[in-house]
Every structure is written in structure tokens, then in C-alpha cells.
Amino acid sequence: MAGRVFTHCSAATMVTGGAPYGLVRDAAIAVADGRIAWVGARAELPQDWTGVEQHNLGGALVTPALVDCHTHLVFGGDRSREFALRLEGASYEEIARAGGGIRSTVSATRDASDEELLASALRRVDDLIADGVAVIEVKSGYGLSIEHELRMLRVARAIEAKRPVRIRTSWLAAHALPPEFEGEADRYIDEVAIPGLEAAAAERLVDAVDGFCEGIGFTPEQMRRVFDQALDLQLRVKLHAEQLSDLKGAVLAAEYDALSADHLEWLAPEDALLLAEKDVVAVLLPGAFYALRETRLPPMDALREAGVAMALATDCNPGSSPLSSLRLAMNMGCTLFRMTAEEALAGATRNGAKALGLEAEYGTIEPGKRADLAIWDAPHPDYLSYWIGGHLLRGRIGAGTYHDA
Image (cartoon, rainbow, N blue to C red):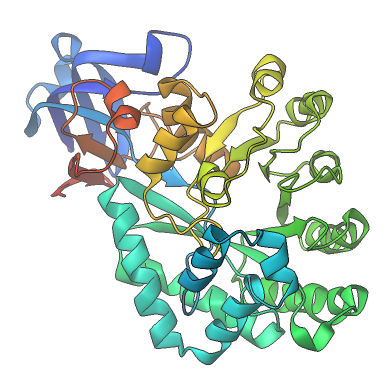
């Protein structure tokens, strides 16, 4: 039989219904044609696989490759000065209303060349790869014109040719208003967000459609117009919802069968039931919560009780979450949001994949899934959320082929 077997490892399969983490001690993982063919205890390896080439992983921990399902990692410039202003007492909203925030990144992004945008994005991608990440969602939203929003997505698509990662792109033109549309949000939706989405779809640059539904962003009614166009183009939607206030963005997301509703610090506990009913993933972003020194936690108990799938992501961006470590986001999910270590790892694997509509390919170690795995120098899956910083990744298995970290 053609293929390869990876042996002498502990496999956190992340398959539900068994031991915590689906943990298999002294495991073997059989791979053929870039897909997982079998996983289980090494002593139970089927006879057909015993004569196949074997790779001894030396007792390492194996998990599904991590999935970062919410990033803004293509951008120009930085906002370190705004970080200092926040330390001096200015709020995120005050900075945004004074022309800083997203608008300052828009100016820097428009001024940067494609080559500069790609080079800076690759540095952040390299950080994520070193953390075991194999799938990254990248949003537009710092161009805020049709030309520059499309340019951002082309740069995001170019990452796949430069690094061993899968990129999923989201159209986020409804992120903020550029100066030329000050006070004219409806005109911006009509002249940029909707026709730009049509152009992005025609160029096959977009996998999903997102928006920032907030007092300093766009209203649910404005987002509804964008989402109607997304549905016409047969594109799934997701939404930045209830980060700073409760505008019922999550309710809107559920109405449109969204892949995910993201942030959710101000989610009304009763609205968790709607997310569960429509199978909308709650993407939690503790990096932004931490960087903005927020104090209102997402309604974790309500999300758990309703059975909502909870994902974790870095929200990597220059302003509110300058974070390029998904493992640190996992630790923050535990320490700040009171997630369990198992919830955190599920959030960065199984549920992160679900938030991108990729659960058929990524997120668990089971037959039929892509053989994209992370190999860790860690004694137990809990360790991945427990240990802060450092280099725990020993190697990667990408499409069934082993690579040292």
C-alpha cells in the first residue's frame, strides 16, 4: 500500500465523543495521497499498513494544524503611537473619531506598494506558521476604495505561492468610512462596498463577506444590503458583531446563516440561542479584548449552555490586536475568557475550521481529512495553552509530508 505511517506519538485527534481531546497514546497515523487514512493505537495498526514506510515521531504530541480564522494581516504601517496614546488614557473610539484608528492604516496601506504589503504580511505569516498554523483567513478593509480593496485581496492570495499555508479571503470593505465619504455611509455602501464585492467575486478573490457592525462602523440595515448582495453571489457571510455595543449584529448574522459572528463581548445571553439554532460559530478574539483593556466578557456560560461552537483567533491587526501568535490567543482565551484548555485547542482547530467552512478538510485527525498536522514538544495538549511564548513546534506534516519546524 502506498503512503506513510507516523508512529510513536500522542495524537490529540480533537474528535468528540471519546477521551478529552480525543487523545490516543502511543498512536499511529496512516497517510495516503495527502489525506489521513487511519488513526489509532499503534498496536492496532491494520495489517495492510505494517509494511509501509514509517516515521518515528519520538513521543511528540500531534494535533491538527492550527487554523487562524480571523486576521487583518495585510496592511501598511503600524499604530504604535496610538498604543502609547491609549496608555495615556485615550479610548479606541476617541482615537478613531479623531482620524486615527483604521483610517491611519488606510492611508499607510494605500501608500504602500504591492511588494511592500506582501513582504510585511509574510513576516506575520511566518510567525503564525511557527505556531503550528496551516490555515489563515485574511480580510480586506484597509483600502476602502474598490481599487485598494481588490489590491489587498490579490496580495492575500499571493501568500499561498510564498508559504505553505491555505489562505481564505474575506471582503471587508464595510470596515470604516474613508475621509472622502465622511458622513455618507449609505453612499459608500452603494458606490464601494457593493460594486467592489461584485468585482472581487468576478475576479475570484473572495471566499466570504464580512462587515463591522458597530456605532463607529455600519448599521445592521447597511450590512443587510451588503449581505443581500453576497447571497446573490452565492458567498457566505460573517460579521464583526457586539464588540463595543449590542446592535444585534449577531441576530443579523444568524438570520443570514453566517459562518461566524466575531468578538461578541456585548452579546445578549439570550441571543446565543439564535447562534446555536443557525449553527453560527462564535469567534472569540481575546487579543483585542486585552489590547483595548476591555472589561466586559463574552457571555461564556450562555454560549456553552446553548451549545455554540466557539473558535479562537488572533485578530492580527495593527491597531486593536497586534498579535501574531495563535498559541498566545489560546492562553488569553483561557486566562481572560475562562475557557478550558480543551475549549481553547478546539477553538484553534475544529471550530476555527468550521468558522471558515472548512470543517470537511481541517480541524480534526480522522480519516478523510487533509494530513496537515502540527508536531509539538509538549507532554500533553493542555501544555499548548498553559505555556506562554517559546518555541514548542517540533515539526509540521503538510499534505502528508513531514517538515522540521
